[in-house]
Length: 269
Image 1: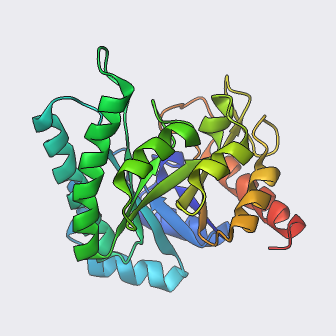
Image 2: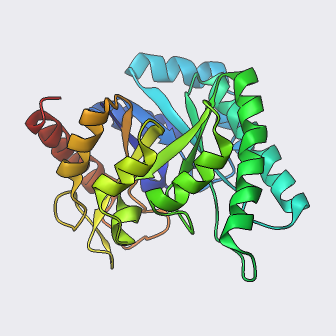
């Protein structure tokens, strides 16, 4: 397993700083969620107009882009809204392809009032099937996160079962299912064979904490991932952009990297 961090954790760093800090803290990859608080990546010129320059910078520091994270979500009953989110997701897939990133991240979203869960699953599955076709063309897989109304493996699996496409899989944010009362063993059982990417964060479910100081059984989850044969990225998602009171990235990102390497050593990784 390899280490990455999401740029959500360093909202005030430019891309050059992000890349150099990743090398300094001994991460292998970065997950692009935003750059300098610009979260629509299609409007970040460093990612659209300076591709060659940034690719050379990444290569010089030995850093890969692990995932390109979009804000697209597909739970709305409004077909036009879903279409707009599809267009955005495909644009983020184009960015991912230009940097040889293997995945993009999307959300299911919140179930709107008055919409049955099963119907909402259908909206999301229909959208993901269309993204699956585009994924085949561009060679970038799509991960849907355990998030919002689909924060557990059980609920996310219900969507993935309806999609049943090899280019569509799960992003297991290890915090969200535990917070929602689902044991990690159950999450893995529901998502087995379909975990493409992993988000790591710890907390006591009222606030986020340094790794090992909260209630998320990270070591147990890493053991489950190893047993599953997972060899992708463990991407630290330190939500500094959304929670400015959190410790700065210069504190959190090195601590998470050290602790993750300690855990990986304990399980023989």
